[in-house]
Image (tube, rainbow, N blue to C red; front, side):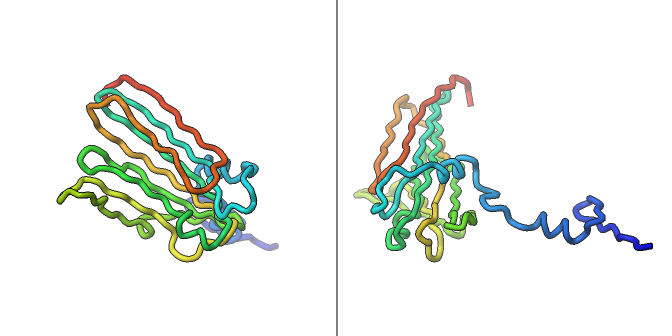
Length: 195
């Protein structure tokens, strides 16, 4: 009579032992990517193949809440077609002012041609002051870019959330890019509750 040993994995008992542990530890392609990243990558491309990079999806969601609070979510997915373009195209930039704005979220992912996803964090980010003709300025720019080479056929996706408190009830959105844009959306919501 043969006896199978039961081993514990994270408090779960199984007769499969190490095989179960191995299957649970294998990374799934796009495991940590939000749904909007997968959706943008799977969209059919409408840009010419000669484009060095293509913005597959660029979305801005603005929400005006009571008390002068504007909240902006910005999400973008760029397809890298040419390795020479990668340093400029695979870059997320968020500008804000330290006196009236707060950068609440800033995340990015690099999805390789094989579908393997690499989350990018603070190690790949840096911040610079936005200088103009004044001695002191509250303007800042946070930049997130992958370290190392980016292969053609990769996708660079990022999202940010910035909160701004302002007495003005108007907000401007600049939508521009040097690469072809497949889909661009801007939406506005209003909420009249106190935050």
